[in-house]
Length: 63
Image (cartoon, rainbow, N blue to C red; front, side, top):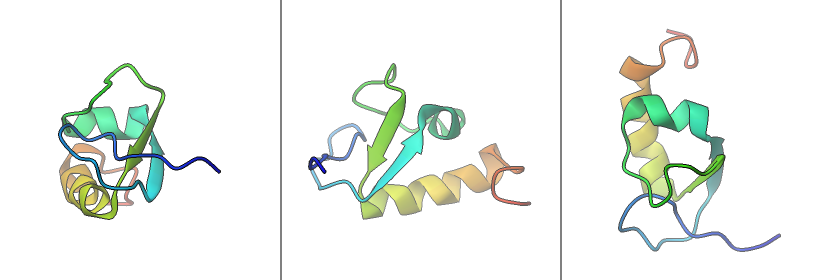
């Protein structure tokens, strides 16, 4: 497996999770490449994405 870097703007941490862009786009998170199909996030940005997704994607998180 290749080592990915976090796709959040300004972050160089190693990525731990990979998400589809359709799940990340509604949250408004700033990305290095907003046209990518997959988004790789580090642990810190994945946690912040989950917090933002609670309001932006209620069906995805089961709310």
